[in-house]
Image (cartoon, rainbow over all chains, first blue to last red; front, side):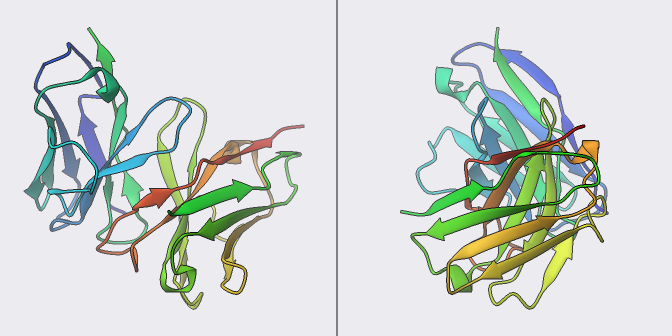
Length: 107
Length: 121
């Protein structure tokens, strides 16, 4: 099974900050990585797929990069509505797996 | 507009069974692979199972293999998850999620709101 390790697991930041979250895969997954956002009590929401393609309707401050085993999600200027938990997910092979999550909280 | 509406979550005793449903609308259901993903309280996301659009192909996570069965009724645009031999560790919110076509090499583009399964005596 492919393991995904996210770092950090917790992040405290201020509105306007640039935030970067890393996801490392235990083996190469090409660009078959997605990022989703989850707010408390809500379903996850797709942000990025194919490592760097921003889903329709997602603000342009969100971007993704990476290939193979190392990936990043960047929020260029953190907004109040961005405080949430972020998960990476690999769709290269079954079983599909998620990273452990990164909780972004207000400093 | 895509809508995914889960139902069937309940309190069930260990060793018991439960069937979850996910009613879909707003897209061509029979052309779309569907998944179940679960999340225990305060924990991360765990992929459970996937079924292809025509129902011919299914896959499962190791923790549910042999106990859970995914199925679909394309005439009713509904996805199911039959859960048998339930354990306390199956307690979670269960989400259904769709892919734009197949799921491998793709992504989950829409999620339902979830249904809570509690396994406890």
